[in-house]
Length: 382
Ligand code: ADP
Image (cartoon, rainbow, N blue to C red; front, top):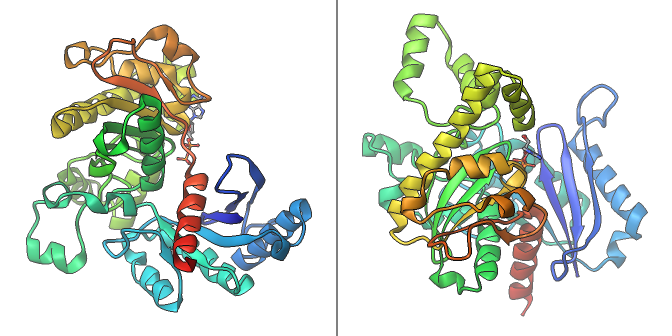
């Protein structure tokens, strides 16, 4: 049994052919520069190329035991709390959610539509980044806005990175040799986007991203938390339009806005060379993480572990030790030798006797999508 996982961006489709029972990838690749000069014409052509590449590597699709195509969809609003088998109605519902995630949902929807057309005999399963956070209590997902207006427009915290956090939480419980239902975690997904999530007994109870993936931590190009009043002020005093403000906080803020580089490796290089802006940027990046860790330790009451994952979380020992520096009185401590050797596999980086363990757990969103898709299909056919 295999699952083809598609993760579609505005100009690329990443794909993996996965046997959900095993970690090995049967095929894996990316079709880039969709709609650009010298690239493939459109998403339909890109998808045909995905199928051709997979068949090149593994032989005809219909001989591969393809159980499902799993689609990563960013925003499921409050309509999708589970992976969902896609039919025309579901496709339309996803389409209706587009205004909530204008940058993120349309490419996924396009790929979904094309893939259903190209592979009509295979079940298509949508897996939503927001789904894992549908367990947030009302007190955590509500913004203190006019409740009628907020309800009418669906303005609330949704949270993102849920597929990753779900996978990493289970792996963390396994590493701790604990029952996931009895394990409380703070999960720090630090990639291009970055978020913190409080997980109680396998369920998300608070998360730093909000209505959109903009709120919370400092990211590569996104600001994270900003007083919304600052945006009104810039609108009035600097004459920035709504679109310019959107661009500002999504594309030219975060590490890029602070230090002129969105990749932490480059920020580190500049900081070590004495660049004061880069030094502040990485301090601020870590400070904001510490701020959320403190908040979520208080939300959880008792946390068993703090978990680092994704590009920065898995690779950047400086960020891990600085973000959690000075928290010994809260039972949080990083062992510097363990920390500096961590990365490629799930491991503990706190001292053995620490009250709250600190873990590095590599994420695998594609495997999680493949598992969720195959479980759904298996449950339906049994
Ligand atoms: P995405 O959020 O797009 O899935 P990833 O989880 O792959 O992204 O994270 C990508 C980010 O990880 C890059 O922007 C880069 O800054 C960071 N990164 C990757 N490797 C390292 C490293 N060795 N040290 C620090 N940061 C790294």
